[in-house]
Amino acid sequence: MSTSDSISQQVTRAFQECFPDDAIDLESDFFDLGGDSLTLVSLCASLEVKMGFNIPPSKLLYHPTVEELAAAIEALPGGAVI
Image 1 (spheres, helix red, strand yellow):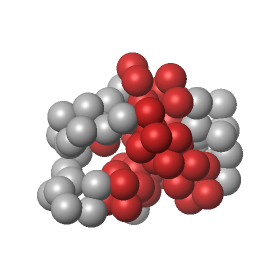
Image 2: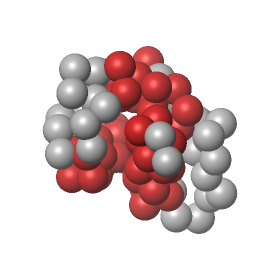
Image 3: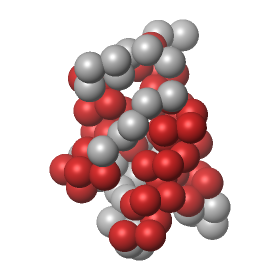
Image 4: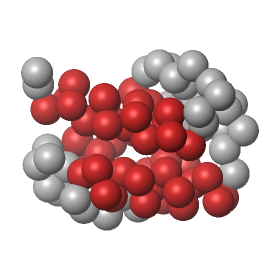
């Protein structure tokens, strides 16, 4: 399993935790799922626990799909370290 696959899987799991009633895939969009500011904080906190480093909320604002967010996280300094 590549690092990017692992990051995508972790982001998918975090989305599933925040949106348990929705089917989540790589194209799932935070805002289309009904994400709000509280969900944003919850998702970032979940990702921080899963990955071991801070995920700035702005990353999700600019990269709202699972696939885009995973790529943005991978590009962060230390983002490839899981």
